[in-house]
Image (tube, rainbow, N blue to C red; front, side, top):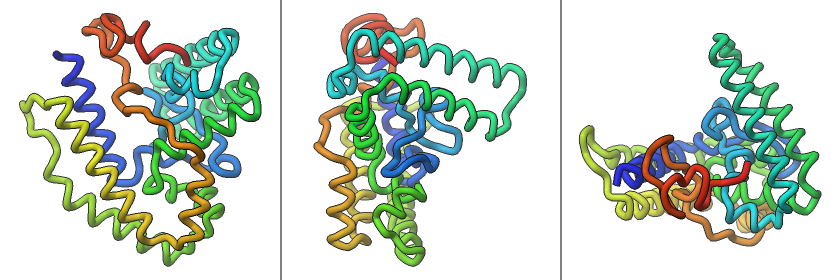
Length: 249
């Protein structure tokens, strides 16, 4: 029960951040968003769901058709990245440049493991799960879509309006959130903010965006969150951090 409440809070918190348009906004990388592995807890400094975080999902691993050897290599890369992050925190090195450097190193290692078609599909999934509201904060995505500064200002205005409308829907202190209800709220929030942003794009830009995100992958955000250490297991039974849908990188 505690695990389900934990997951619900994480999912709802992610939803609020998505509405703000920052939680999954990735730092600029390559064309179409080819870079950006996650920082602490799978999020890049300054916001961003990194590929390292996404690669934990068995469903995404299956979508990419990763071999057992690739999974083992990615697991090792993930462990090394976490250790470097931990060392940076413990030494008091909170310089964003240092974290960005660690991201670059991890990203390069991941790219060396994946085949070109796997990397391309991972990029699509990263953009798709992040959504257009967050993606437009990336310079490379704006350039690809041809979004003007005037358009960007209108997009942010529309997005912020939705954020203000939904701000009062956070769980109250001491409230025990219902996982199913929280997931439904998250879906509603995401849909509203996506519609607000898409409403500011031209038909040509919408088509380009659909090309950038590729075929839809059916995955629940709760599948991306591992159970707290020592807590009851999530999907797949006790110890979801080692089993269920949270293994891998």
